[in-house]
Image 1 (spheres, rainbow, N blue to C red):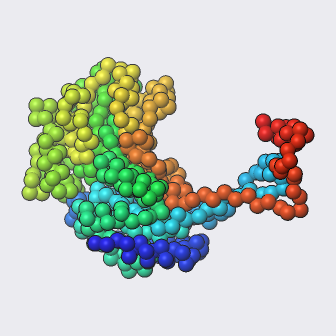
Image 2: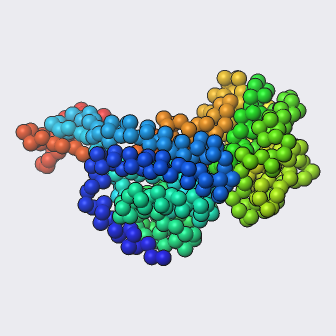
Image 3: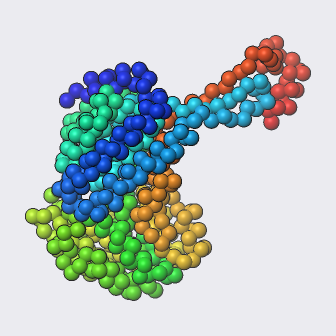
Length: 456
């Protein structure tokens, strides 16, 4: 595949200037929303095919969140896109200062397979709102969803404005050889490094939404029953294939036994006595990941689950207890329905454990103690998270979502999506009826005194 003609066509279209119009962007968002509603059932069916998602989960976590993002963007776009007036210092008298909001130009969005609708279309909303043209590259691992998205986009927008490129590594490589004005990538750390390397060759700005081992800490003051319920929800949603899923649990030894007992009870309440037969429980994306996750399960440490079915690519919601930091399950992001539980003496040990590891994409703290809450939320570096819940911070339009360090760079959602795909252009408009001579040569002592008066 040669991606150059695609990028050239989009650049020519961008230079026409149509996307700079606020009305054009608003109408594009409206068309996208209408197309999603039209293809809603096809999207839900495709998510069932690719990931075994129930209709309820697929709408709640993908289609519905995308529609919500469009509505939020549509409501606030006029205000966000408005030129901002800024105060002008006396040194620039007489003038006015402003920030104009410009689109970057031709944008590449590369999305993953685990939330193939949400993580394709939600960044697309921001790119459209900011006035860019977009090349969208979904994952080859979720082919059914990619086919529906391709049809949805091709029926809604001309390819020189927004287009979908299907395929795998060869297509990714061809796209990354091109000069884009912005790249937005969601996926794994190693591929993210390669994308960043390619972007650097063209000095292309980039957002990386990656992942990592997102921890939970259970303090002795936590509401243990509620903590267990909310961790089970966040961990086994999408069969554990969520970048911000709780990856492991650190629990204080004083409440360890009670908490693990409740964790087992809550899992059984949600998924029944045989999760492999539950039609609303998802599946692993493919055999490669199925085998990888199975290899992380230490049968001697299973306290719940552990069974699997290679024919349906399902692995039971599994809990491992008395896990050690050196165990294989703690050496990589699990990205599957396996929850390791580690015991710590107190909050200080949990704090040190998390701090000594790469910055996670999310952190979940369960406590009723304000001092512990402040310690973890203020002193630890992580992308985002929750106190006394999991996952739900991603569904808040007014909060930016993104990683830090190994878990990524840049953020999006709501206003932050618009800002991410927007270049803020600073302009000083100088009036001509006055021209202060201070800056011009020849310099003099009196000029120096006046300059020092203002510049301090």
